[in-house]
Image (tube, rainbow, N blue to C red; front, side, top):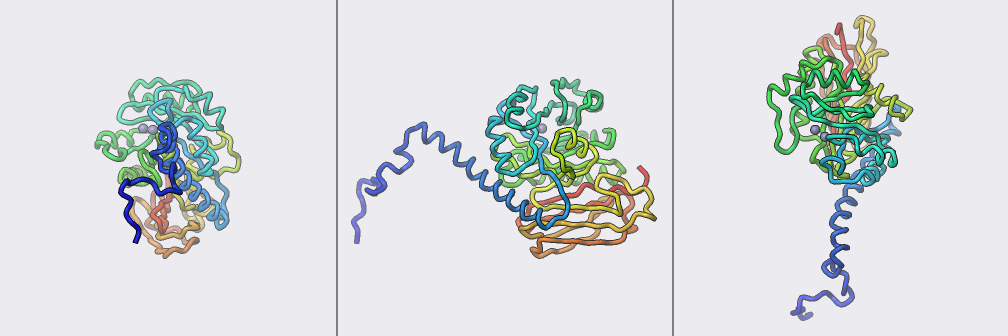
Amino acid sequence: MKKPNPSHEVMKPYKGKQTMHQSKSAREERRWQKPLEYARHVMEDTAARVDASRRLFPYRFLRGDCHAHTQHSDGIGTVAEMAEMVRAAGLDFQYITDHWGLTQTPECKQHGLWVGQEPGTEYHHLGILGLRSTFEPERNLLADYARVKQMKGVPFIPHPAGWWPRKVYTAAQRQALFTLPAPFLMEIINGANMIGKAFDYTDEAAVEVWDELLTAGRQVHAMGNTDSHSPHGIGTVWNGVWASRCDEATILKRLQAGRMFVSEGPLLHLTVGSTGMGSRVKDRRQAGPVKLTVVDSRGLLRVRLVADGRVRRTWHMDGEPVMKQSLTLPRYARTYIRIEAIAIDGKRGYTNPVYLGRP
Ligand SMILES: [Zn+2]
Ligand SMILES: [Zn+2]
């Protein structure tokens, strides 16, 4: 038997290999680089999963995130580090929506990222896309929202129900959402403070509020954004936008029309006759069949049909990667229908609704 080494030194062939033998600066660099590398592996895996799913999915879409922060406000990553992770995640577009101004603009241009902003207003933060000048809020939700529209910007409501890990919004904050002029854009998944996945209990609450708004007859287009404050969180949730051209004007137009699904992994498509997601079926007698396609190359666990705030059908998928259904428009669906899916690893996806009946 070998004698124990009394001096607790490194085995001879490994002399100098232990981290504590490295210079302090080398150690410090590893402390930042390693977690970044782990996050990159996760995002590369998601990109490969989506690529494999695309081969089973007959519809073309672009993937992108409309909400993230850098060192230009309260984020910890540089624009260059964010851009590197956007490439690893295979995203087609990424907005950097820093608080308090637009100093990120020149760097974003250099790295091919788009520029937005996120000031605070009354009751909520206000996400703004497509504005080239800094927006100074009056802190009146309706007035600020209207002014963004007037300036030809695209406003959206981020994290409408609170954010992880501590913040849960008050009833008054939720109620304020019912005063906004519809249609409007609202996040139903926000990945703030999350790494590896985005969905948490605040998103569960956001989906609930969304269904309440929809059931009350509001047209609310759902978005899924990371709100990442570090490069590690990029790519955990994204919008699958029905567009073939990846320029900002095209994407903003599609987002404002609700022509996208929200996902952490699964791909989803829903039509009622010739009416697509985000649009309204005018005459239900001539509506045509409800057609849905849900794909996840990693395997689906469950697909659900939600109408007027209630789960009406559930399909248990047992790991099957593809689900296709065609059904007649059910009578119980009076205001809207939408589809949601969960994959075997818990990643979620949501279509935007198809609206039914008069607005
Ligand atoms: Zn925010
Ligand atoms: Zn934010």
